Image 1: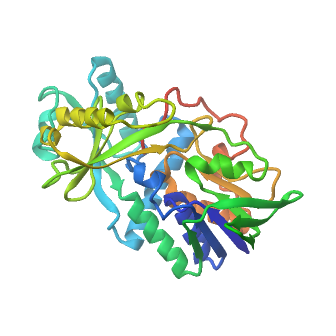
Image 2: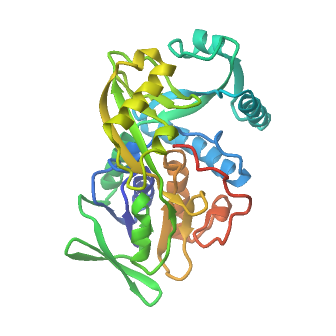
Image 3: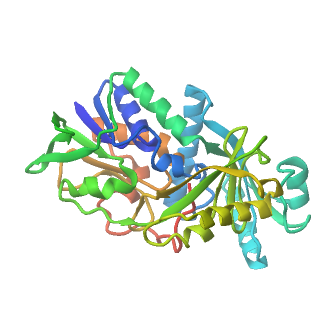
Length: 375
């Protein structure tokens, strides 16, 4: 069997590796380099605590377990840190956070409420909280991931198992004979294939259009900046009321804010004032970051399907066409790689993916009332 995987981010590279592992002839295609597009612009915090929908929670919880298994198998050089803090400003939001933590803990998910004083003493000494008694949610097992490094490693493993990587060359066309995938065109060359996996992230709607399918995406740009530090003053990931901060190696910190995202406009163009505001918000939470120099700032477009949930698995109408489109790529890459490879090779449709199939008319439960958190 010959399979083309379009997109070499964490999702596409994981699928390509799992397929190649099982002896499949894989063509991994990307217009850039592995992990250098959306994966590099991701906050890259793996979790199940940010969602309430039961089916989505279950998928992400399985994703975390599979991600840990992947780290045990491959090594942990792409795991930046483990642990996550979240706190709210308003009393009503703090009460809601307490309830969420209690519900997660009751399900066996590692979650607790600690005081800000305890968080400073035991977890993040450089963070400025509202007061020493402020409630802070602590999720000790949620990791932050170096997504580009992971995508590169998975791509290398896929190639080591026989996959062909066509990088820096976008897919120009996908051939369909009646209702069956026949080939992909990359540059001026057509390659015969039996299946195509659309893991093209924010460009997945364009790949879907090549076979006459409509894939509606929510267009939402996100600005992330990396600040250069002598020594990173944070140890893990955190969601403060106005800004998200995480460690990004020994000498860098990554920051993001939806407040700033909302000012980017429809083109997603980031001005220097946006980067400065982002750094200022981070400096209010971690004073050592107030004067840190930006090392890198990028705007990424999040691949969010029309209802906020992933689009995973085979699509009706064209045999051999599969979608792997999700905003939570870091959390789900390991489990999606495993389950999609199995579905492609055996036609076994795993029940975990049932609510997220591409041809659903609606989700089994209420769709998110607000956009997903940056993952």
